[in-house]
Length: 390
Image (cartoon, rainbow, N blue to C red):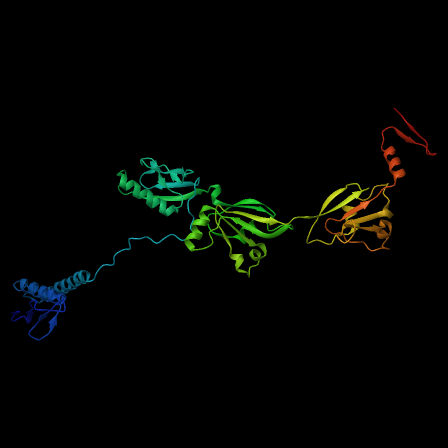
């Protein structure tokens, strides 16, 4: 301990250590830390150095200001030295699972700051790499985000010694077919929907115009590499194909409506086997017709109208419906119809079922005359005679 008499300042020397902290005990019995010792010593040394100069009142005021600045600065330096600095984390946080991951055949815009000659559009090869000038080895791109690829390229340039401080930015210019979702089956507009990340299946179906009338029971998703990689990281279902009831997907109150798809997935909406009925015999357009669901029930007269109506030689009173019936000896049931009475409203108009056959027979004499009338060169007389001109 040293005392500067006349100035009222006491300089304390470092003393013993208690618990690892440097202490000094002044005459007043006050224990001082290392910071307080340095500050006190600095004040004493500054004051002694100014004794021969600071004699006037103005100099005393100036000296006080210098002492205050010195004490504050010294305290700040000590605080910085005594407080440990937080070390930055060496491991970067993993990218969010819904971030877009680069796929083969993607087109990337790569910007090199301060090296515009290298700025170019690069296409990811089918093997998932890109070849960059000045680098002897291609850079792996597939499976990375654009940010991760930019950092990987910067590191590659630093290790090669070509660029000391490379700064690279990458953006997605065009996605490959693997960056879209293919939708087929019972949707109104089957198409390839461009997507760059996770999307709800119900949103994809909506973009395709919704479901058709012949939609089946299930929708099947064939997973692409991105979906399998993401689901594996999340602990989800990683089977190559996944089926779910379409009713659950379209019901917003059901958890199935949150089913997601990723770029590279293929969505197949199941079609239900169409129900068919047949109109045969003396009609203008015989053949099989689809029995559409969700519409009004199909009756005999409606089916006849869709077939172009009966011909002129049809025996309307002898029409029939041939319907499958395992209980009948021949496995079918014949339901007699009188189209004239149905048309007049005297008989109910029967409803047709799937696989029904509406048969309209014809009159043989009328059919022969009808054939003759359609022959070129036929002239009919009032007495029913005919002359064929050759």
